[in-house]
Image 1 (cartoon, rainbow, N blue to C red):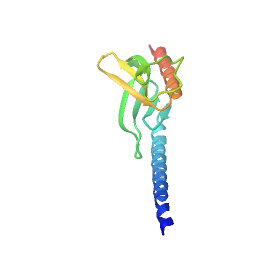
Image 2 (spheres, rainbow, N blue to C red):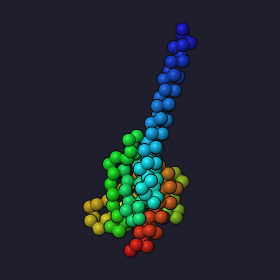
Image 3 (spheres, rainbow, N blue to C red):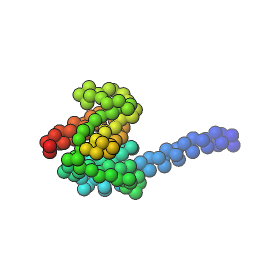
Image 4 (tube, rainbow, N blue to C red):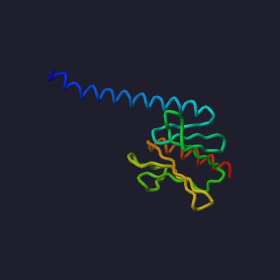
Length: 139
């Protein structure tokens, strides 16, 4: 009986991991359905991002689909910056590590700033370079 009780915490951990995996799978499936309307899209645990022509839409992923969706046009963006650990970095020389990674969009209205979080620096750098080149081509 003692051995059975020793295995009980392991069973609880296994059930927790299975639920977590199923939850993430459901988020990914909802994202894939949502992303079909966009030319380019990204998914990570912090945010989903979709680009259709010059319009960016982003929000938080959930099992039922993205929530808190915000949309803006790259035509309205005055500057784009890449932040790692709350410091602006040069995308040509990104750091290897960092915790808080975000793309920041500034608009002509100085009070309006949008920060889209990322989990990987390399993914944020690729999106930065792509969006900056797209923004430059439409100016």
